[in-house]
Image 1 (cartoon, one colour):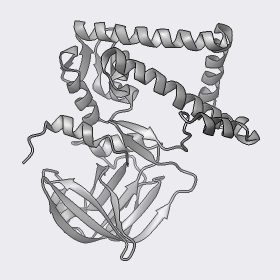
Image 2 (cartoon, rainbow, N blue to C red; image 1 turned 90 degrees about the vertical axis):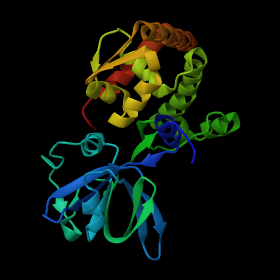
Image 3 (cartoon, rainbow, N blue to C red; image 1 turned 60 degrees about the horizontal axis):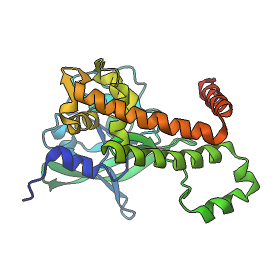
Length: 308
């Protein structure tokens, strides 16, 4: 048996991007229950089988083992609060959610990207988890929605990929009149190219990932911040945030529901902020300081306006 560090191994596994689901069913007494799970995967087209896994220590284990039906609610990128709610414990998870009942009265989360209604097909041993296999007997899809993605310890979004490292491909795309004039394309390729350069510099300066960098930036003033607030700022659910904070070692101090940087942590944060300041200067120099400031203000106005 391999003797791996558990928290480190979770970070390793998080390198594989997954979707985010909420699995729901009813207890024998009719109580609605649900858990957030990223372990969902497809198994077979004929028969239509899917799987997901549940921790053997989960409070809802017996209910899922014995249920006749369960639902897989694949979340959209607008449902981070839903993911966080069902990942926690000790609260009324369904309070305020206008859910409907599917087969076996399994709750169906509204506005989910996809709702798969499944018959409990089989349960298999899987180490410290049980592997739940379900047969899909019905489904619903929300049109024009995008999936919520979990990758490298943070919530992410799925979008078309452009290989900005391939200069020939980029130049070819620029010859296409529509793409060269399409604002979303310009924003995406700019972000991909510029962020990669910046994140490489952060790694060279202090060996930090983008996720940990965001924590340093949020706590750079040395003041404590509530974990729920910090998690929202850095786009991380509770467990992933806890793992990231633990990876920072003596640079961060956690006290109950708050976290703050130690003196050594503030020094690292200042070093990283200097890298960011230098990078912003280089970008401003590339297009001119006035145009750079105008661009930032234009982007603020674009995302702060009401939905078109």
